[in-house]
Length: 122
Length: 110
Image (cartoon, rainbow over all chains, first blue to last red; front, side, top):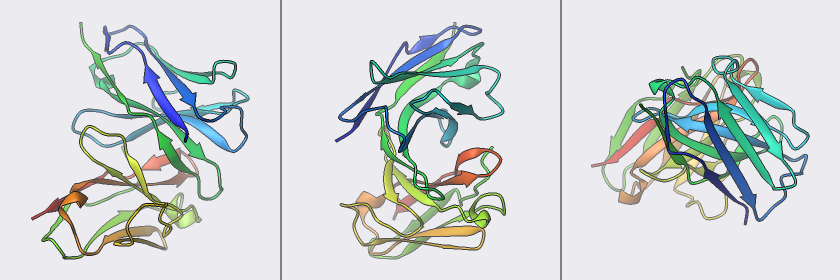
């Protein structure tokens, strides 16, 4: 059974960089069958897709965050990471890492991390 | 903001049937991309409830059913139970925005 686990600081100061890592266990991150994703949920709001990376390092992030987001992968550690620069209070959210199964045109999230709350506050 | 629109809330008495709509456009659902549904309980990660419009993963009760037509999709819950009280999200792919989630629907069991 694949498991994903987010890790990183729960409190980040405004204008600093949010950094999270997702450790994948029970399966290899080095598979062409999946994308590795970041999704967030601000308090009281819905799910917001952030972006993905594949095992070769190809990435995508949504236009509204693209200038501030870096997603990277470390296949030797079976991990992928999110860095979000210049954070504001609007970036306060529960951040989930997730695996998308690639079955075009039917890609879907089959495994989620438990989520980690990141609060942006001084 | 999400490109998939859901009703903010639906409710029903135990045993009743409720449906949740997910309305998209010609760049996502209408372009032929499938719709998937997730159930989210408070404080927990979302759980895959339906994939490829109408397929239930192992362990999901057959009280849950899904369909897709044109630029919309729907999730139906028959024989509503107290444990079904949760938030539900649809998800698809948008040709301009990659993966997208619906606005979310809170299901309340009266």
